[in-house]
Image (cartoon, rainbow, N blue to C red):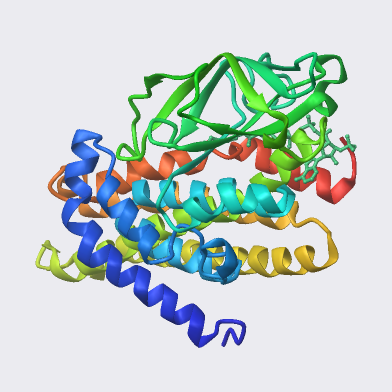
Length: 387
Ligand code: CAA
């Protein structure tokens, strides 16, 4: 039916499915409960090419397209969204931006080890007082007199993978008076003086992915590590988020698929009032609506993947399609996981089944990489051209 899905796409989907079932499923519950970062399986995902799916082979990646990335990520998240979070940040928030805006030397030094999974990448935009209004940050980068280094000071928050990241793409202000036109992007090496990590966030869901604050105290960033031109940072951040939002939509789809599949099995097994619960119309209605939302999410993701392919070829944008996929898939995942718990009753509420984990993990997809409210803003602005 979908002739844009090739044998290659199906192969990476199957490889991700097998890996998730064999290697991640046995440890997912433990890592959710303890909050330990699953460094060994993350490294293995790198060896299998999952950490740089769209990165060309000459830069250490798998050289595939966005649909391949989305299909693989969905399979990983179907088993454990925490592993999916680390994978999505490496692929779309980190590698995509460096490939699009980096110099050849930056790609060789900072993409190759991340795409191969040897090292971990992160993306840092948010600050304690700057979230959805990303253009209002308080951190600063000031060029030294010799013009060799920027001196960076400030505090960034909610940085996914920061506790383990070797390199971080940082967005900070070089000319605050210009507001969003004064934002510049930098590649940060986390083992250099002046960089430190703040507290790791205790989270409701995706508990095995590590999120923390990062602190810059007179960190000296060489001019060669500026990503793009001065003042280009906001556009780089937004361009990268468009790619990231397809990833989060795929993560949400994986969670919703897992919750639906578990509910179908349970509806066929569990009996009440002398019949299978799947024979009750109220359960049938839930299953039917869950299936429609899952498939509609997948179709919006396909649309966004195709729009991105076209936009990359024409230097255009696919912001609206990416936001539509993220908005719909994340709200669907929240709804579908809620219904799945309801269908399972007490068992759904118990930690003996993974449904309550899917439900907790689904919530973040409505928040990070742009809240549902921000996605609606992007979609409506794209439709009207009004700000
Ligand atoms: N691609 C390219 N350029 C873009 C763009 C995009 N997607 N979106 C905006 N721009 C450009 C505009 O064209 C405009 O350019 P000009 O100045 O040349 O005209 C410029 O950027 C400013 O655009 P806006 O006036 O639309 O900007 P705004 O301040 O109104 O903000 C917004 C728009 C959509 C609200 C944006 O700020 C936004 O997306 N906010 C949410 C931020 C977000 O997602 N944060 C989470 C980040 S990371 C995270 O979650 C943690 C993690 O580790 C995963």
